[in-house]
Amino acid sequence: MTYQDAIEYLYTQTPLFQNVGQEAYKEGLYNTVTIDRHLGCPHKLYKTIHVAGTNGKGSVSHTLAAILQASGYKTGLYTSPHLTDFRERIRIDGKPISPDFVVKFIENNRDFLEPLHPSFFEVTTAMAFSWFAQQEVDVAVIETGLGGRLDCTNIIKPVLSIITNIGFDHTKFLGDTLPRIAFEKAGIIKKNVPAIIGEHCDQTRPVFERKAEEVGAKIVFAQDNCKIISHKYINPSKVVYETAALPGLESGLAGMCQEKNANTILTAVDELKRRRFRITEDAVRKGFRDVCRMTGLRGRWQLVRRKPDIICDTGHNSHGLKYIARHLEELSSKPGAGQLRIVMGMVNDKDISDVLAVMPRNARYYFTQASVQRALDASTLRDMARQAGLTGRVFRTVAQAINTAQREAAPEDLIFVGGSTFVVADLLTMRDFFIQG
Image (cartoon, rainbow, N blue to C red; front, top):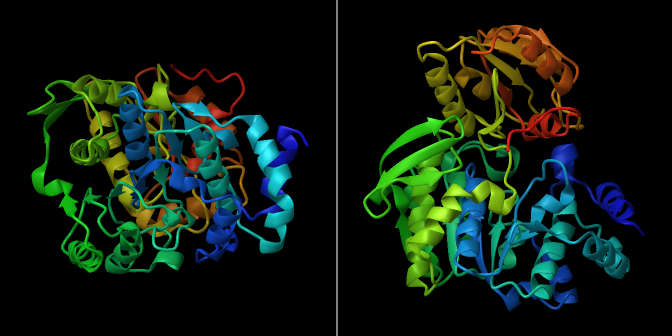
């Protein structure tokens, strides 16, 4: 079996939520516990940090991993989905999992796995836990896939739990109210394990407080003690935060939503120090500044080309896209700014109307669809957008939409590419397209 054979096996023999959506979702931890025992419970061989939330968990996970890595810890990082290569999901000190290990894991375990009919995410999680154990990491940052309580990553007993925020996403699985969604996310809070809540509201705070009291966990609400005093954008892909303890803190993640993520991260760092992690100021600064280089993170307010500026972001629900829309409107209203152009596609299991309601009205839209089964038909998206007051044309591929937007743009214009993780993935795999950095 080659690496490509192994990847093809994963994609065809296990249902992949990334491609097909709800058909791939498996509720409950039976398969995960069964597979974990078969493998010898590898996740118990190193410390873990568990990260959940509607938005921001990828940025928080990557930045924490970069800070730990800069502090001298051998650091595992498990995230999803991937953009262009399966191995992006499983990294140690920024390096993707070995192709040989992927092959051997499938070859050695397929006879055990196949009768269970596990999901793609169940197999991938087991693979990540095994890789981290084999490579003897000191700590691993583990991002949930969907929800928390019944997510297959929830077999770990971490040293710290983090819930970034609560918004409406995956409501078919997690519930259609903020308290119900918060209840699912709060499932990662465990006995005697401190929990950081990045953002809360009047509807979600009591849910977290009840869960923490129920299991006997310390809970810290990061927004109660905001560490960010102010911020200043240096360019579209760099921001500087002012904090009392870390003046002039540079970050390579510059989207408007990142200020709240930064506050969550700084609060988590303080708690990790209390848990006897050796984290220096220099390590925090390096992790914030170099997170993308150190961990391979892409697609978070990423500047991919200049004149015209082309920015992409993987935000894909109304909770996340409202920050993106606000940032785009701010940039496009500056003196000398040109036309705002938005290349947009979505998947068919999101609340499209809520997303379209927050998008800028002053933009020219290029509606498209990503190369996955879940992609919403571009014509359908255009028709729904018209009802929301947004106008634009339809393009059958992301490449066609981006190339057209570039041809029509002046150097001072701004092109944004997003609406779906998979639209960004198609951008990053375009041939002959130069990516900055």
